Length: 153
Ligand SMILES: [Zn+2]
Image 1 (cartoon, rainbow, N blue to C red):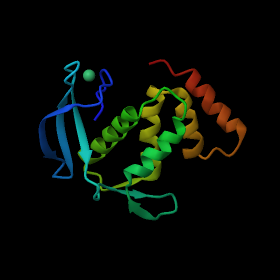
Image 2 (image 1 turned 180 degrees about the vertical axis):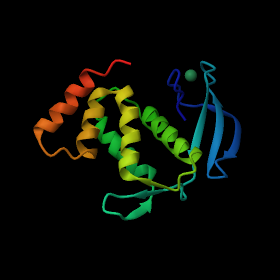
Image 3 (image 1 turned 45 degrees about the vertical axis):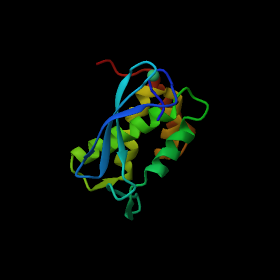
Image 4 (image 1 turned 90 degrees about the vertical axis):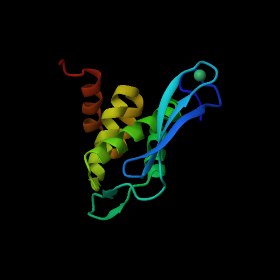
């Protein structure tokens, strides 16, 4: 696995243990080049949670599918695959921490959107245009102006 600190190709595993009731492997890693230390959560391919689609159908959450949809939105943007995987890992962790077994596709999309808005505005708009299924240009423009002038906190 590539070092997120310096991009070195190879990192060393310091510690490895099961988490999330055995559904993921938590690994502490270190980079031999810059000594950067980080943690990864590597999901088992097996069932993690389920997605309830807009039409009511329920299907197993597929990380690959979610990853691809984000990758499409991030095309030619300065977002790395590590960042996208990190984003998904956080969403998966949050879902598991909340002990949610079924998540609606709207909710999953919303979580991805709120993570993307912090990461890359262009990717955010692209993902939103698919996820929110904008019916007309006006709606799309409203969304655009909303992210360009974020509400003051
Ligand atoms: Zn490094």
